[in-house]
Length: 401
Image (cartoon, rainbow, N blue to C red; front, side, top):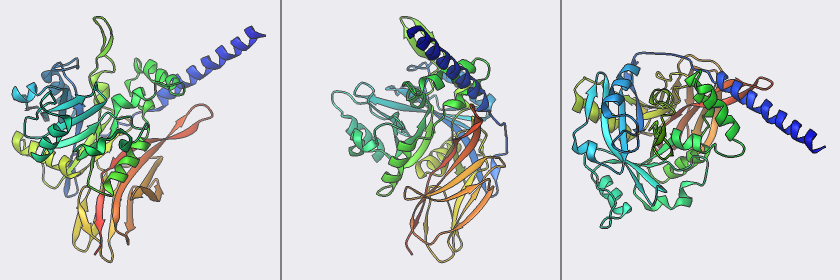
């Protein structure tokens, strides 16, 4: 009897593994390479939170620069852990069309607290004479962007970690490194293994592990009701898994991760190929929240736009707008299929549109408005459909007349 049960259990796990492996291939990638100009706006895609050999990554600055340029990435923010040496070495440069912006990831309390600090200053690091709070307050005072990083995206909320007592003006909507590690549980491990086994045949199978960061978005909405917080999509890319001793596994590759998640800035003026100008334009857009997060591993999202119009004034993501009679929000999407667009106000979904490429919606209440877009993909068994996150916008703040 026991042998029969064990055989059935083994057969069940084998069937689940086969289905999980097959599903990974169904999380396909659609290639799309539009221009950077979109009407009167310009959009530039970047990768954020990349590690190099200055800390725990497996590639150098030159390698990252050449790869980003070959892939058509407009900017890369490199955040090596607890070192400002790349900033001191003046490694800010342009590799072809790609801006390389050195920054730092501050890791404290044995990695339990992590923050990205991006800006024009050389930030201090926590030591015996400086607390983490003092370091971040100093960076914020100097105008740097301080981003809460690496917290579990569907685990305990930000408030449960006592992070709100620390100065930060941005959070990671999604961090790929944290995202796949969250799947190391009894329910997610098979799905994770399916994607990673399929990876050797088709790197786009990493799309299969994407999950909507529900807890992180709840935190983001809650924080934005009391103060402005910007959201970025990041990678934690190091392509360097410690296997013990001197053994390292360079997986997943930088290239596969650079295809997966982008922070896309929206500007009213274009890059002009001068490094300082384009760097300032990029950092100002991030600082002001003029951006959205795109899960480009599913499909390139450049061309998405979220605006609000009141009278003769048009606001983009990150802007504020005064509510008047006739105020509307507008949403434009690249052509695609199986798309569900949700309008979120003060943390609650107030409207859902399906397969609508252009949306106009009247607004008669003040609030914090953002947009999230999902793609429906067919999954085995029974060809069920699952919603994958595709686009997460920063908010537009509409205030009373």
